[in-house]
Image (cartoon, rainbow, N blue to C red; front, side, top):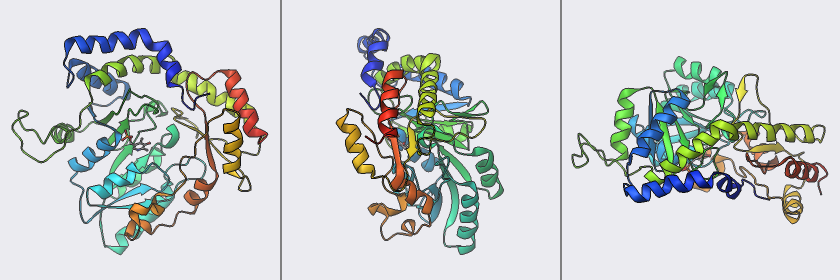
Length: 375
Ligand SMILES: *Cc1c(COP(=O)(O)O)cnc(C)c1O
């Protein structure tokens, strides 16, 4: 059994994917081919924003937004403590200081009350210029933007949605990628919408930022590629990846998103009453199910359970074993000082189960039973 079965997906989509990449080989326009523009239009339309700018990966996508906002030394950005490293790494790499905020124990996402507390604390302290908030759609569930957006507005902060895991998710029909002032996603193969290598995208309704990001992504280009008006980076989505993503986006919309929702319901049913805390979805929220993550009782030996499951051919993952503020990379900096007991507990108790659109009912049943019986 695969944790996320990309081989099965390829089997199903092989004719279309092979034809799409073959076409790119024949055209030989491997960088910025027309497939890239087409994909950007399709993604912008799906998400419901004016601009989509594709780039090299989800980490670059975050970096490009921070660059466009001019975030750097002396600035601080608030980031959830329970997330993938890139959400905070990119802030620090730009020379700013990420400060970590605890998450909600049910949704795993940024806790709006703690966010506001932290904003007041940082402002009162006066050490940093508080500029922005990064909210992450962890495991596919959108963060609580109904509360986070007004809080950011109230304090004049920019809001960046890290939707690397959330593509396809929504709140009352409003899709991931459309929240905050700008949003990003990742097309890393195992993400909800993945390509066959690295890829990422930025979404925004702001014309000025969109133009700046397009410039930063291609060596700070001006009117043309060899007119360089600022220092930038080289971060583009390959034409081959764009061609693959066009095929995958269609499958994603047609049935994959529906299929993962079905798998999540099977898990919910099978694991009811098992003593595990199952993933919570607030009313009106749709998850893209990047992960199906349960919380084990504190007394469960997680390593032993994972080993037993592995023995039965069932792969599981721990996302994430360490809070951001405890990462060695932040040791000795202000980022290391954070009060995040919920994240600390989650890092000890979470377990992500196999989850993908091609999982069968039988496979699901087998995983659920093994987890439930702890054998
Ligand atoms: C995967 C991920 C990223 C980074 O995406 P890459 O394409 O791997 O660079 C950023 N944030 C979160 C929350 C992620 O899960």
